[in-house]
Length: 468
Ligand SMILES: *Cc1c(COP(=O)(O)O)cnc(C)c1O
Image 1: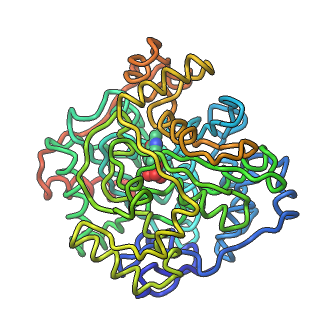
Image 2 (image 1 turned 60 degrees about the horizontal axis):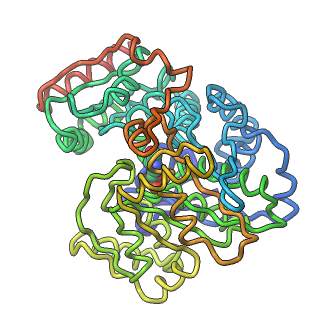
């Protein structure tokens, strides 16, 4: 299986190559050269498998010769062993047609664990084969950092350094990072803002000498392996609801377009997903695009669902490439005009294709609290604010055909956003027992000024110590 760039100017690579590269050299994102497709009988044969078995089978369609299904199975077993639910991705019925697909039973209580837990093992696997080590650096305003740290802790071939803005994350978020005491993990609190942290990471990647010396790498959401690892849970849920003999719809609360792109990919592989519904908060660029072909950048406003506070959905480029019939030159030109003009000129024919399949919906903070309250009152279900946006979108936009069940991606545990849940319902959801002592655990992190050379020498010291 080979992968090509959406912008057409980078050499094609195999799975191992795209895993390590992340972004293509031409600024594009990697996509499979051809899509694997399954027949109805192939899908039926996947019924009844455990989640690690199912995910190894589905992901092996994308790894080709680079990694075997048996090797993948070993990794998926380990990746999902620490989850807090025997089903890994339980499906909970909310009403007559909507089902919450709970993707938050991993170590950091958000759906990013589904892909990142496996990515840690994939990195370790390919690096151990080639005898290399990498240093993963990243900046976080809260959630992504902890998921990356949990994924990379104790992996032999990886060092990880995460920068967070001192005093500007919630205590739960900071503790989920700083109480991981593994020797290959380093947390740095920067005396500055999240933007300062992100600028520092960019500066480290732009310093070619430093980048090569430290073998810098990233696990950000444009990595194809993350998308591949998110396809199996849509397969599991659709099979449980009767696919391939009964079609389904999917609703996803969306930020970077990664999770919903995985659902699109499952459909592209032949899973009968008839409708894809996108939920947004007040940052509604995707909903505006679907309503009126207005993909314009209007700045980010904070909301109760911070993981969806995004102006530019980076994975949308992958869908655009497909909507443009894989015309890489046109994709590159469209993305470049978006960057310079702040508005993406999507041709009418491509937009019509998008609207035939996708529906968008956006919900403000007041509506989000009302939806959390309604779900609690009518279904005794405690939803986090991101999940509540997804459920509201499902209800507002599901097709008239009532026979079509809707799978709603439940992306965070309610205890991860206790303030909003308490405000809506009066109930403060407790942390699951495996995290109940988070507030008593020992923390370890360095505090550094907003100064590139100080941070670079800390990264160098961390990496050298572990390589020794
Ligand atoms: C990251 C995240 C999202 C958005 O997912 P994308 O793949 O970026 O669209 C939604 N909800 C939660 C809780 C998240 O952490």
